[in-house]
Length: 288
Image 1 (spheres, rainbow, N blue to C red):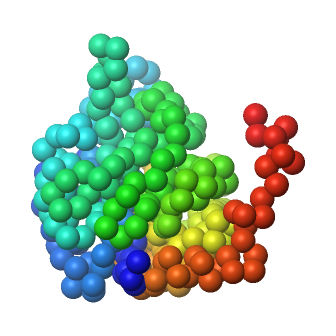
Image 2: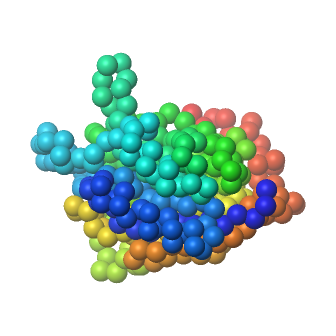
């Protein structure tokens, strides 16, 4: 694989799907002008995230209008982004509507598109706080083959668990991406976002997941305020040593880095190969 240019977006996306689809062309063109081959947009790009993590549907069984609009993976909204992507590989988040057993269910999903088609998707596995009242949990981590390499996708809280990225790395992911709608702490608020406990953890998890798997990681996030949540931003690109090589702060922006991701992973594993030097028999009792 030759060098690729990776872009991580920090931006605000709200409930108005039409407005989002109208502003995405400008974002994609800005990234294209900077030579980006892989663009990672935040979780809940289309339709926005929840307004509250404790009672996401309202204090009681409130109306569905309190929840993000749900779209189908094969629907017109996803197709519009796929067409916009053209030769760029783009990952973005949606609330996915699916029909299962005659029941309408929702997933918090990441979709990867390129050249007018859907290459693959990931349904968020780990659901914090009240998310489980709204979304059904995904069931696994499977890399997606794309023109920029084999991508392992995660959605915000997924990256808290080392097993998520390790499963993707063991399935030959060449590059990790994590789409987030990661807010500041809802219990221990700080006057400054950069001092917030969650700001520290957000960066820590990104760096740890990259370093322990010796892979590049591209991490996006929402910004601004939606309902009672204030999002951190802090989109970034992290190298296989766990070093942040490009980053935005709390405001919107695009973090860009160029690398030969396959060569860098091979170089990082030349003497200390974390995947090859695992001892699975020693972990068995702790994995269940």
